[in-house]
Length: 410
Image (cartoon, rainbow, N blue to C red; front, side, top):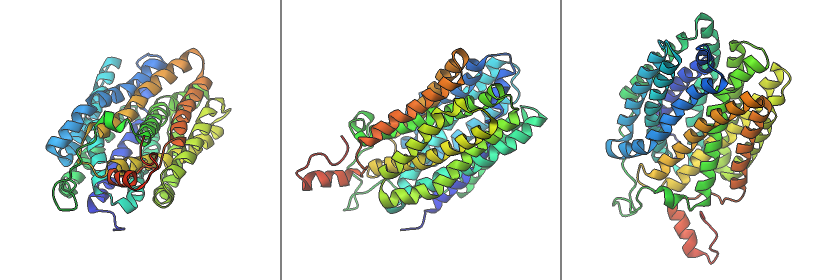
């Protein structure tokens, strides 16, 4: 019961390779876009375009996963992103880079939604937080090394990281194709028959306070970590502090290092003490360190603040994944509630760089980061009023054995 399933270890290994490649292009992407003579908003739009396609294609991906299975969709998604990333390396105009990067968003949502569905089905309930932590660590270990390698590669040209990323994705696809076991069967009832709980619908789940809090924290994660961190922080380092692209990679690596440190303990803590006691401190730390980042006077302060923000994110990001698993564990695979979870992060990753980039252009980086921290504060407030997540059957049991109508999602 305390051993992680083999399939989850395969996902972890694939995540390391995927994130390594993703980290390679993180320092180069907005700077590469700005080399075509566009402003901050247009440069950050390249990051947002990727997330826009993820957002638009997520509902379709949920249906494809249900119909064709997680493993097949996972592999297809990896190959699509590999092809689009390789094309980015040969873009000759801004619009080409924008189109190629956006196309990769389709494949990205395919492998991310299918991976999340597998995580929920594979992770035993008693160690779901630990499994979610390892799952996130698989991505972040690669994300830690990726920016450092990418910062070195940009000295040989801004196009080279895209070629290396495409190769990394092909390696990840090979690992999954040859080592990933067949998807586990759908949940069953106590008598061995198929579970009577269908995939959760979005509007059904939206009535649960816990689910609304999970959506908010995932939106904040997309806005601050996947959006502003990738699109705005490198520009702030280069334009606001006058440092080179290499320092941008080091700053992103510091964020990833903070993530790794927190993730090593957050999963076990949430399994032992619950999701909320870990979520709330994580969101608090992430919000405070992000809000003051724009006033950092030098690169040393930026390194410290981004590392602290990474610690906060490392506490809450895997924990709300485990919380989602708690809510949907008794459900069949797929469902619009699971797709909407992925969409919430993508919506944040789309709107965050655009809004923060617009503010940075018009007002300054100080207000851009303050607004980003405010988004995290909203998620914190929703978690403060949410209950501890529980599986559907546990909620039903609580409702029938207690006169108090408050347990469970509202």
